[in-house]
Each structure stands twice: as structure tokens, then as C-alpha cells.
Image 1 (cartoon, one colour):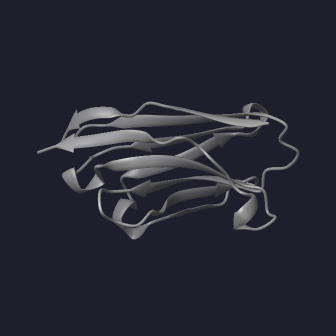
Image 2: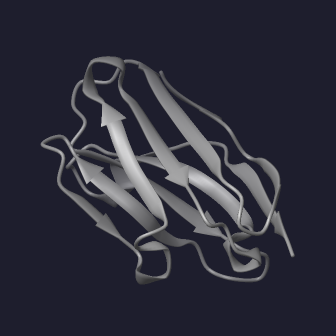
Length: 118
């Protein structure tokens, strides 16, 4: 049994900051990468940021320069620092654990709501 516990979502004004955290626990035998996806109402879920075990990162173009992903391998925890937030960043943010076995074996968090008011 694997659990992903997300925290840090909430309501913030445009230009503000939030920090999301996701801690993975349980029977995790390997983690290739961890990341954050988001899904706005009526839209598809897509990758926001991803970090590999070796620290290599990639970001969606829409968040480059504003969001920073980091991880603590010893704690199986990934963070997403979100600065200069915009109303269009409003979405449910989902933590993802890529085990390197294919997407059907990924783990997902329950999602945390981020709302940015204008």
C-alpha cells in the first residue's frame, strides 16, 4: 500500500505564492521521478513540473520562471514552490510518482485545490 499525502493548496491573490508538498510512504520500492500535474475545470490534466531522482527537472512553458520543483529523496517528498501566481494557475494539483515501469504503474495523490483570485 502506497500513500501520497499532499498539502499546501489554498486560496491566494494574484502575484502571491504557495508551496505544495507531497510525501510518499508505504511499499515504495523504486521512484524514478516525482512531479506535479494540474487539471483546471473542464480541461485535461497536464504536467506542470517533474524532477528525476538525479535532480533533472522539466517544466511546462506556462510556469517556467515562476515555479520551482524540488525533492528530498530520503523522505520521498516532492515540493512545488509557486511564485507570481496568476488566475490561470487555478486548478487541482496532483502529485505523481513515476516508478519507471510505465504510466499504468504510477501513483497519484488525491489532489489539492489551488485558487488564485484576481
